[in-house]
Length: 101
Image (cartoon, rainbow, N blue to C red):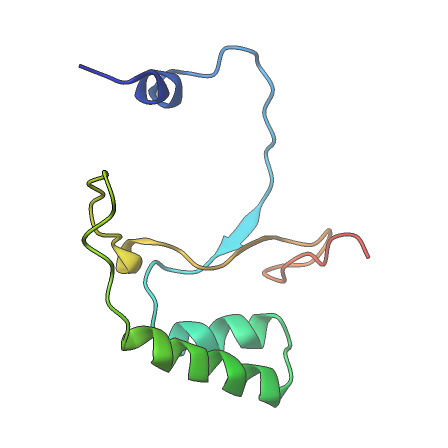
């Protein structure tokens, strides 16, 4: 039996509004290479990259909780998520948009 949320998310959108935006999305998965790629795309300074890598290495040592109070959640598949997606800028090929300032 389907829940109300499943019914809403699995049905076709009937109101006709569509936003067609070209995006640049990296492949699914999380690794040091992914962290470096995202930092590079955002033109971050070296200290920020080092901060992110340190956080990533700490995250690798953590375990997912498996004893939630009164709930049974499946483990999150972190390798099945894309961690970067940005709109492409106007007139730019392959460069992400900067958005509003």
